[in-house]
Every structure is written in C-alpha cells, then in structure tokens.
Image (cartoon, rainbow, N blue to C red; front, side, top):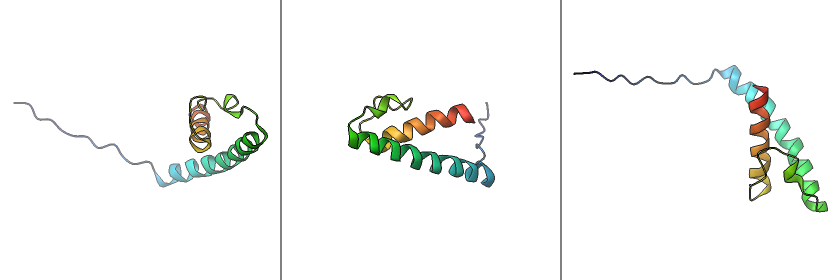
Length: 74
C-alpha cells in the first residue's frame, strides 16, 4: 500500500500581496485611462498591450496586458 500525502501550497506572504497590489493597481489605472482615451478617440489600443489582442472588453484587455507586464517584472 502506498500512502498519498497532500501537500498544501503556502499562501504568499503579506508583503508579497502588498507588493502585487502596489504594482497592479497603479499600472491598471494608468493603462485603463490610456485604453479609455484610445477607445473614445477610435484608436486601436489593443495592439499596444501585449496579451490583450483577443479580449472582448476594455477591462479584460487591460487586465491581460497588466498580467503580461507583471510576468516580465516579477
């Protein structure tokens, strides 16, 4: 008989969550404003953000772009 043990993945430390929020929120707000202005003017802003090309709305497009950016930073 073999015993299967389940290993739990530790949660990120509180400092890591704070760092994530301090990077994600300002970047999201900045790129959301750029995307909203581009959407209003009629510019194709999705090509500017990597990862957002196939997204259907502005929020998911900006989020995909931020997550792609953050994967390069961290």
